[in-house]
Image 1 (tube, helix red, strand yellow):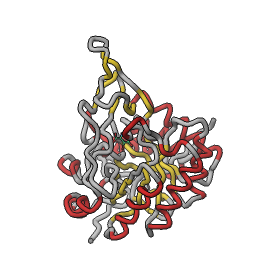
Image 2: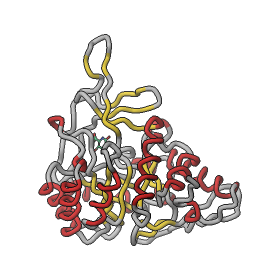
Image 3: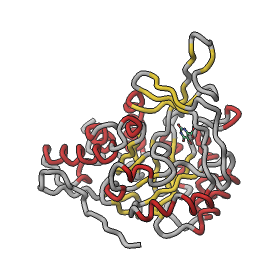
Length: 321
Ligand code: RRO
């Protein structure tokens, strides 16, 4: 597939260039802004709002080897500044996704990151094996170890170093693609989970998934979401993400981190980069503004220009505290 990549993607009205390139392990991206898994559909849905190739990468909703129906409605609840979801991993399965969703992403020249999930090491391995026929347009696999909405109240696969190592080890052994581990800050010591993931073969860790949460309707005395509890995302969790990224970067300065959690502005992205992330994903903000990822990119570049930052890499881990 031909790539019409725009180096740096600095297309604002100010023509002074900012070198926005970043590297996630061996994967070189023209800029550090991606979609967050689960917030922009399974394929090229956002192409209706802006050219997807303008982003560093597009991370699709988590897939398993087989189709999965997901959780009962309602699946979303707006909770103040935050959003509560329990989609429950609904997806078409990897084979159907290859046929029905990937082609539109390829036509859009998007750099595609596939997210996979499982409830056991065997299911992660099965999903990885299903991906082995992937076209070269897939740049990486993000292993979702931290969905808060598995059936039967089971959640957060990556709550232990042992399970994290086993799942990442199995996926890395099955696949010849860079593996990123999506973790949750909902653990006592995220740095030790991150270390387990990278030791087992992950080229990067994505921090953080949503936080376990619950909303109850006082009138009905029942949970607001069909499945009961859910995962909290949006502005309310942004400082949690910044703290978790900062903690992992401090403990493991060589570990490559993709930061995610409540990013709605360029300043939010700058914060995660300063905390130690090499790239940033935009998720919940996309529900209010489908152009949020590309707007965040424009605002990040404008911030760089205002602060005399000519290379985004300069600010990664650049916090003073
Ligand atoms: O599908 C979901 O309910 C879901 C997933 Br896979 C996830 O990783 N995080 C989340 O908040 N919801």
